[in-house]
Amino acid sequence: MKKKVVLALMLVGALSLSFATDGETLYTQYCQACHQANGEGIPGTYPFISGPIKNLSSFDVGREFVIATTLFGLQGELMQRGYIYNSVMPGYGQMMSDEEVATLLNWIVEQTSWQRRGVATQSAQPFTAEEVAKVRALKLTPDQVHELLLKVEAQMHGTNPAPGQNQNP
Image (cartoon, rainbow, N blue to C red; front, side):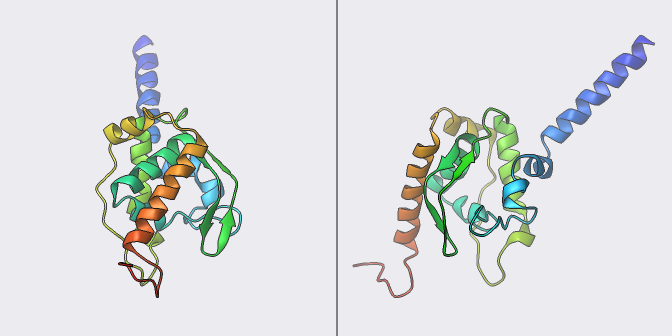
């Protein structure tokens, strides 16, 4: 009888570990209610993440922003596709381990069906638990994550100016 109980407990433990490290499960649990199953969000209410995370993941400050947003949340104005978002996204650092955050973000980046037709996305290295741990150590507030967003936007606009803007003034 004891062997059966121990075996059952081991099975439950193994199943919970496999669920905890599955990116799709983590996305469904923490992200899908706002950003929707397809990553498109709800225009004017919750921003889309389907393409931006992959592009942001291709350069250092973008990666830091993506990780920080997941861990600490985001508060402040964000403009996307002509909509202005100015609400609070909660952080999930209290609920997810470094490995789980990396797994979640890697799953999002891998969703090729979320890519925009005709829009090139940058390639990115996979997120690692070590990388997440370094950002977690910063202990940012959602407002500080917004400041990081401003740095990201400045870098993106500097390397990808709007049509008609000269890159070298």
